Image (cartoon, rainbow over all chains, first blue to last red):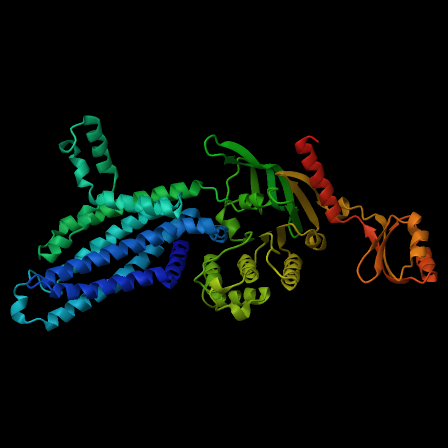
Length: 268
Length: 316
């Protein structure tokens, strides 16, 4: 455990000093602030647009951080051979992989917390500067705690995406890992369509393959509850719990896969 | 007990994209390094030196054969606790400082609290980069990174240290410092296993050497056994050598080569007495600059061993 924590700390320290996450967070904060201006253009819909854009910005920039740091986590170490000195020390390959993963998760959580705080600051400002009468038209209060649930599911989704990126980065190049991870993320959001593919194309073998892919590929649609939260609809706690459990199982499987690949690898 | 043992250790890599075929990078290496010795692992580029070191660090898995360090299989975490490793052309995390990197590694070795700072300061002082400890590694030169690499290999006061080309990227001062560190390690009973192209370093430091060529062990043993240290002749450097005198001595020497500033190097055969020759040259008006005995060097032995291995390989 200690070795995993030490590797994770080093990843966190290294990534918070990298300019990439900083610029992503800065850009996300800028988008959240800009969404306030956009919301001013649409009378009555301002709070919905503000929340929708803010949550989307947190999710998209979080995704970029997860993908671009995640794909480099292992492949960059292999390419630059910086892992040689680490693996020659009392650190097993599985501890190294788990440390890398938790280090990036820690980075993500910190970055998403900063973005969420910026988001809440904008919402608070709008809440304080809006007439009470206008507020009655809002489907939910500005500082709705359900927003935190939406962000929490975004974090779970990004933890899953990080595990995907880490898995690919144990055996492929950064570019290929990025393409595969983003490809899976896109497929994951349209996964439900694969379930009933025979309705689109009535060819039985294709439908069977599509059904198989539905069960294998990650289903990321349940992690997006932005529409419900923005419209003030409460998502049942069991649905949130099941989605989190699904993420946990998928992440464990991916980490086991990443460790299995990494333990067998030769580092030339 | 041997500090390092390999038995019939071999490694094949697959080469070719469409029809991959095995390429043998290391072929049946059997080697034993005693505790407390400085062992030089020599060979030309592509001989299999780094492959061997990576097999010993379990960065590569062998195709066949076994390797043990301190009596335990390589890769055993308890062994890794007791060894140090400097990879060839090391690279570390750009955004960390040398102090942070070494503190991280010291904690990996199980050091805690004030022991971490104490040990990190000690190794930074030992490799001579204490004043740059708070600079980020991206600002370091190649030589400084090499020193950081050496520092991290010494953090746990290892019983066996593996150094892959430790002199690479270092200036003459740095090389001398590394030589001194290696001798200090030997004096405190640490086994030093190092690969190098620089034969003079090996000659100055090693008790034993092994020479690898094309993945095979072509020679190994104590320097005193490998090199006969027989006198092969004398090298005499003189100035003011007149043409007449040059013509007179030419038949009795193996060669006369003009060097800078009117000086000549005379290659005397071993059977020729240098005293008599010096007197004769002095009488003829030449000025003696230096006289050195010529003995077989590790370089001569290296060239012979590697050359013979390559000839066998090509069938010439």
